[in-house]
Length: 300
Image (tube, rainbow, N blue to C red):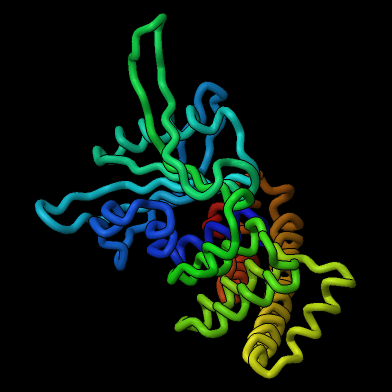
């Protein structure tokens, strides 16, 4: 799973945690975070380049207290901080405002660079000495934040995000163990725990010396639950790998059958075939190839 997809999946599962970490408490308390409506397949033209872009996460949230209204929360996950990001977020916010007619709350999560912790960043537009317009978004720089502070937070998502932060006095082995210990002892379902562990395992890579220290730490009795959790994570990952391999094999065979029957496929058709994640659906398509007279008969 790539960085982008890993974090989009993580933030969908722990959206409420993310908002509570990023927003000041009075703002987060005004949002009904238990039932967000995800709209993250929205496409916009990335002006002025003109390229179509799929936004990372667009979520509609109701407010509470007083007169209830809807708020659109837009989140972008960036591998590293870029100077042009503020104006890009401004363009997306305007497009979202025009589409939904609701206030937009924009957030950027930087894996590297950006501000320490969370900062409200304002972009201004001026002519000569005259202020014309301004736009504010929240920026969260993981690599410049300090892990111990987030390990002390109550939100489980914070314990996984700490894996990408500055260790301060912690060694890499102790940081990994601290993250996993918090996750092991948290009140989480299996799916959520897997996602958090996967984040820590992905971003805390240990060399031989650190691995030896980590194994010694794990040998202590209080850390037994971490060992069990890591074994479960590894078994789940292996099972997912086997299932993915089966899907890819079925998809490759189906692609060969279709192209033998109808010739090379257009890019859009290949993309639709690549998006199918159900073995049953691929099998049904394989049966349909035998009787289809045209490519349209396959529904791709």
